[in-house]
Image (cartoon, rainbow, N blue to C red; front, side, top):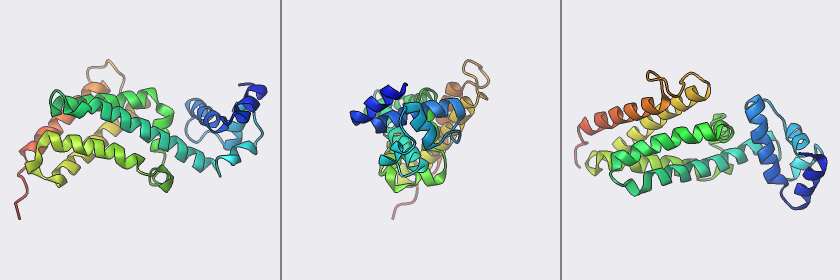
Length: 209
């Protein structure tokens, strides 16, 4: 983007979005820690002071990336769930594929979402992270049935999230190449999720009262 284009984006009130796009581009090129606010400003074509109209520091920019990432991530999971059609297990498996697809298609956002604990737990993110987990927890509850209780559903949701996140990170780093029967992330996540569901279903339900 040229200096003139950056000035025009700023004039029309699009500087914030332009900085977001610049940050995603820089993350793709250099990794999560490989850029500063000044780098983003230079990429947009504005002065080094201009980003501070929207972000107090680099951490604030990363939090905005994480918030947008979790919002989009939640929508993708909810769309994949599709109210549990045609049955809860099939819909849950779709969510696993959607999870991996999001990490693959939006590596900058995904990286910002889980950059560190301070980013994930920041008040600036609002309910965005909780919404994503709630979608997975609701799916887990539907898959194992109400008789198992909310604790079992929450435990299953955490197990599936931890497993899928691990597979996504390994895939992004090139350690789980797609198409390899022994390590295809889609196959790995799908088969492991089914196994986790079966184990959860076979546990004894908590005693009543």
